[in-house]
Length: 142
Image (cartoon, rainbow, N blue to C red):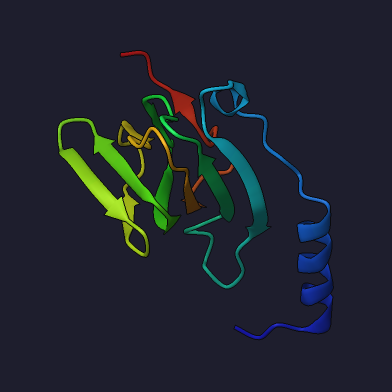
């Protein structure tokens, strides 16, 4: 990928003035804190992936995202600090430790939680969306 000065300036502005998505579960005191760090349309992908969204999620002690899905959006989850439990409906539970990553296919109902009562977890989350007209996240009642 060739980065030109204009792209670096855009990325610098995007980092300095982030546009935060207001997701209902991220606004609760017990839920994780989501900080979106990049949102940019992809180029040279024949529109198979229309957009990639990169975020950092902080899970405080005992924090969890609710059961949810990402319509038409694959999720890559990379644990930066701590350990995170990822559960996919019908597929079981996986413990991701610092440095580990997982990919959650589009349209799968899942959740992520920090089971520690004393330490926080920080994760990098990348969503690759095939359809920008669909919502990024849909909370699922269980």
